[in-house]
Amino acid sequence: MPVEASVSGETTGLLSLMKPGRLTEMLVLLELATRPTGRLRPIADRLGVSVQTISLLQRRFRREGKVALIGGRYHTTPAGVAALHAEVTSIRSDLDTRIAELQLVRECRAIAAEPVRVGTPVVLYMRDGDLYAREGSGGASRGVAQGNARPGELVEVRQLEGVLPLPPAKVLCLVVPTRSLASLSPVVPQLRRALAHTDDHLLGAEGPEAVHAMRRSTSRSFVRFGVAAAAREAALLGVPAAVVVSDSYLTSFLQRLGEPGPSVPIDVRTIGTI
Image (cartoon, rainbow, N blue to C red):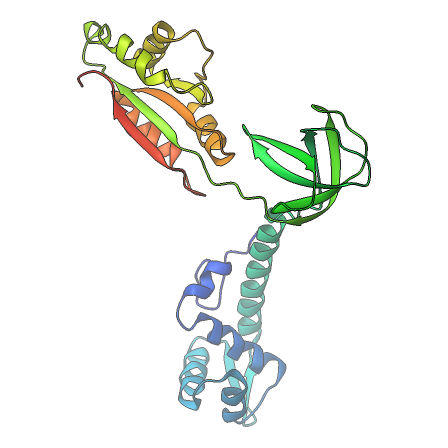
């Protein structure tokens, strides 16, 4: 867990280095902690900053009790070492966490799109949200099959190379009115027409009016719970989603759909009169 301390007394982590001068502050304290000196120019030369900058920092550090002038030499005090240690520990913890989140994929399992033979180079690609493999070596993402597989079976693939291109699909938001129950009646035929070309879409409904209208408009199954998360995940995997949303739920739904992370294209259309 990151340590909540820093050279300047603020919460740290990698983002703390965005503050102007923060990295220089840390490096000056580190220099004085590991190379006590009576001259500031060597520090300035090593860090590539002006002597004036180093002079101003050492004065501030002395006022804060982090640096002391002893016998004509600048030394980092125990308080300065503690602050520096906390800062470096926080950044290292943050960095370790971020590195752990960067998964380096060296092997995977994919659906055989055609007969695949062990030891054969394969090309990987996405279709309808699933990862497929076919024999070949000309794709953007490639590997070597580790076993034999018939079409539709899973095959393990190693020695991965390249990047799998996966542009996000669109989330279609079909907004229905909540003003009155009577206003839903003309919505159904319009909604049926809007859903006529969504056979490859993940379907969802957000809000009671939307669920009611969806049930009357299609016999297909649709997501009712965790709709925004499901639509977002589908879109990021290249599967388009069509979600019927009650107008009173629209703002909340769009906020959840646009959570931090990769963005997905959104198309909002009104069904009926709102």
